[in-house]
Image (cartoon, rainbow, N blue to C red; front, side, top):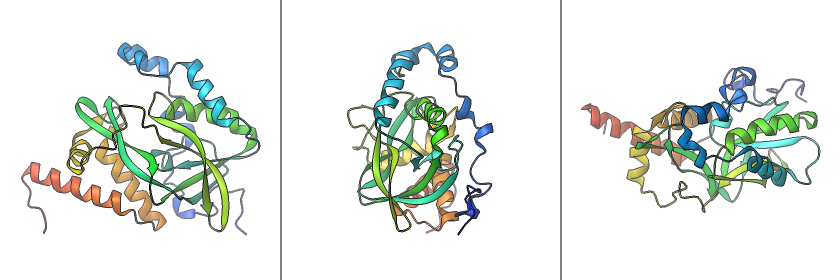
Length: 246
């Protein structure tokens, strides 16, 4: 049996590829500092009271260690102190880049960007992080400050599978009541947003490439993300006047 005093016992290939939580920007992310920088965001973000109510509702009835399922940037920068990381599969859902960012994270009003969401689909591969029971309160406060900064996601427990074991994982689903969630985006719009979106967290193209790169080290093929990345790079090459390989 792997030594579970090592969080990477099951996936040594991820050692050094997941950011140290202690140095992560998201661990000390300060919402008030962002509002001071751009007061217009105040009408968009959740207030502390609302966000804490969402967290309490999501975790109601939970006890013991907590598994958190990451399918986007949580996979390489969870900002959480975890005791175990495992490859996991969530059935009935799929990773979709349909959350439009116009507020400076990875896009702007002039050049929107995209984030991933978990939506209805045929299945989603990702990483599950196990948080020790004693750390759940502190770590979920950090997690919700990041993922539930503003409307866009629904915090829910869903069934997942790790190897031959069925578990419940906390994750963040697309909230279709939020205008920023755009399942109607055309492929061309997705490519354009991913190609041009940029903000304080980096570019949308970089975000997508990180997902694809992370899967390479896990031996996972996500045809949707890989095809999108190829299309984005072809689009950018044409814009730059380069010759695109046939």
